[in-house]
Amino acid sequence: MKFKYNDSTRKLIRRILRVNQTEVERLLWNRIRNRRLIGARFIRQYSIGRYVLDFYCPEKRLAIELDGSQHLEQNQVEYDKERTEYLRSLNIQVIRFWNNQIFNEMNNVLEAITNELTHP
Image 1: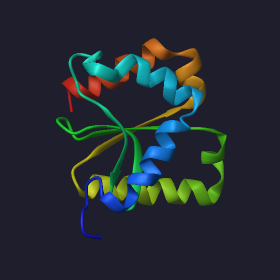
Image 2: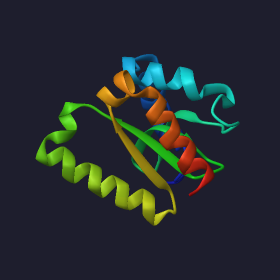
Image 3: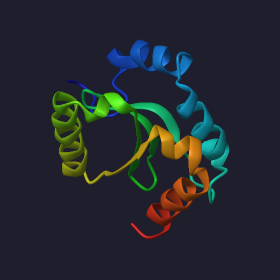
């Protein structure tokens, strides 16, 4: 892979994911876009290596991943673990939220993200 960060060969994939964002992605994006959360800049559908992250704050090296029920399946659990280990090897912190947390506990989610941004 030529570029580790936002590889141009993955541009179409990123664009498709942005256009077809899930409802939970849209809800969180509306709360963190345009530096709305303590001035931190987030990018949605940012690729690092072979992975496309839901949201990424480059200044703080923080990835946010939103997980639905499919992430409970064993093969997905292993994939997520591998993905997280890869990102951590690049000094990128990963925080994950379940979709129901976005729907039901948005203030707690935003507080957890804020804590990661201010106390890495």
